[in-house]
Amino acid sequence: MIEAELEWTSKLEVQNIVDIGVWQGGSVALLDSVFRPKKLLAIEYSTRELPHLDAYVEEQSRQENVRVYKGVNQADLSRFTELLDFEFGNEKIDLAIDDASHHYLETLLSFNLVFPRMSEGGVFVIEDWQWSTMEEYYESDYFKDKEGLANLVLQCVIACACRPDVVREVIVKNHSVLVVRGEAELERGTFDITDIARNKGENVPLVL
Ligand SMILES: C[S@@+](CC[C@H](N)C(=O)[O-])C[C@H]1O[C@@H](n2cnc3c(N)ncnc32)[C@H](O)[C@@H]1O
Image 1: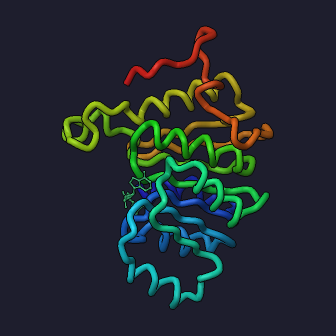
Image 2: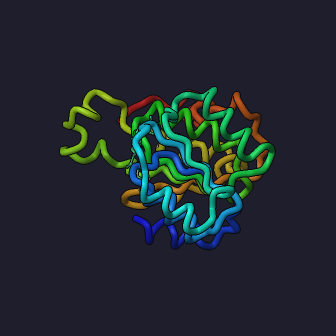
């Protein structure tokens, strides 16, 4: 998965990154090592201690660049907006990786919030989008009765057909989907990919 994502994203000029879902900090350290971004904002719902990540940030003297906020739900739009405004202001985000809840609604909310703030050609990565195709996941307590995250992938694909100026390209890999930002100016706060993705004049129903 890492190789598939880096194959594509390593071509980008990346200054600002958003990492959603930190776990033990592996992706934060990886993204920081690969891109050496000006700013990497990471959010995580859990408030557990992350001594290895803290040690990495300190050893590398990256306190100003790597900003980790715990106790933040990706669906908490007011807190997430506050952090995006505080860390990036009006600067564009070049790469966002969502590896947090993998639930459709939460991921949709984060996508709608972050995507308008991205640079043209920037990439929003949705990880582990395929869980609803795999019995060990769709039968699990965590995902049972949840809408498939694959619905969001379908909406992004249809949005690419309707509005390539918004979604320039969608690159589908087995464990991750890369949604490439087009050149359109998008209004922050009101953007909704489900409004843009229309099939036969209607919103795309949640079918997965
Ligand atoms: C798969 S792990 C992330 C792994 C990490 N990106 C990496 O590659 O090293 C998912 C993380 O997302 C967090 N998470 C789950 N639901 C979340 C939510 N609604 N908001 C923010 N974080 C969430 C979990 O606590 C967990 O630490």
